[in-house]
Amino acid sequence: MDTSKEEISCPGVSLSCCRTGLAFKAGIICSLNIDKERIMALTVIAKFVAKPGKEEILKKELLARIEPTRAEDGCIVYDLHQDVDNPAVLVFLESWKSREDLEQHLQMPYLQSLLGMVDEICAEPPEIRLANQIG
View 1 (cartoon, rainbow, N blue to C red):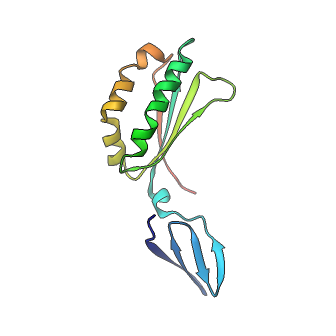
View 2 (cartoon, one colour):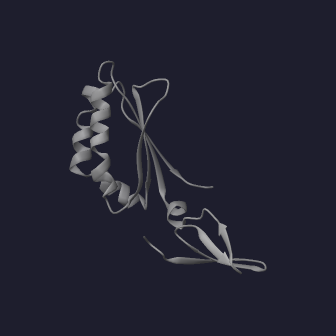
View 3 (cartoon, helix red, strand yellow):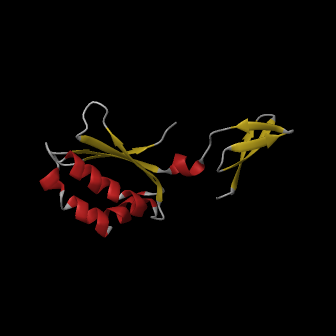
């Protein structure tokens, strides 16, 4: 675990935060929910819609990409979700340290092989949105 610290100064208060978000001041423990890596990260929302009858195939293929992707250096979060009302809709919520890390991910052979299957198993092209966390 990264225990690098960042000093945060407020009038009359000096807190030292590490990645875990815990701070100590005069023996008081405060939960700050601050993670500088996440604040600076690039968020990706990737939506896939399976063709009728291809839902399980798409889910299996997407699940197979989780482990190798999470092992990539720039990957912070890589979670797959399935729509509650429409099981044909699968969404990755991703967080990357940088746009360059995302671009490297997109070139990985296991992702390129998935993209090669899209026409066969997806009802529409994947919808990819990039966002920066602001709060």
